[in-house]
Amino acid sequence: MNSKAKLILHPVRMKIVQTLIGRKELNVQQIQARLTEVPQATLYRHLNKLLEGNVIQVVKENQIRGTVEKFYALNEQEQSATGDIQKLNRDEHLHLFLTFMTHVLGQYEAYLQQDEIDLVKDGVSFRQAMIYLSDQEFQEFIAEMSEVFLKVINNEPSNERKARNISTIFIPDAKK
Image (cartoon, rainbow, N blue to C red):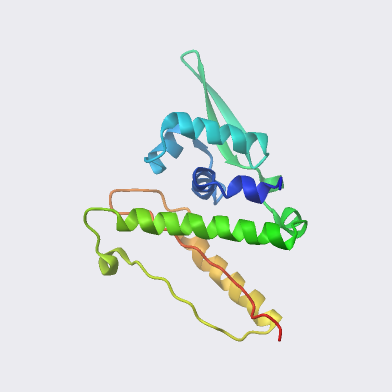
């Protein structure tokens, strides 16, 4: 399977993409400051893979003492992987979903492996709810959720803010 979705679903590349969401333009040092667990050589390797796949682009270059500082952003023309996703067969969809779930599981396991955790204080939660919505109501619901995400997605890291991963999955019930 050769798709942008597969390219993005690598754990490090997914973190890079998540870091750039919200029209952010960041240089390697700024990305590194947000992804402290990723070694710099690994970060460069995955940035190059995302560049080759047209997922991200260099949007600005600054000349600094004989070196070039590059600023990266999501490639606006390539942001929608919908067309790519539509071309996948059922097995490929299942593979992508399992990759995504494995990534989420890895994040949770890494959290639990810390010496000190406080699930309540840290706001750890996972829930599942069945909701009944018409197609129109569902589109309105998605739009409202997007508005809520947009209010916080551009928050910059600080001493008071900790990174929190939010994953959403919508699966309609199978028709009987």
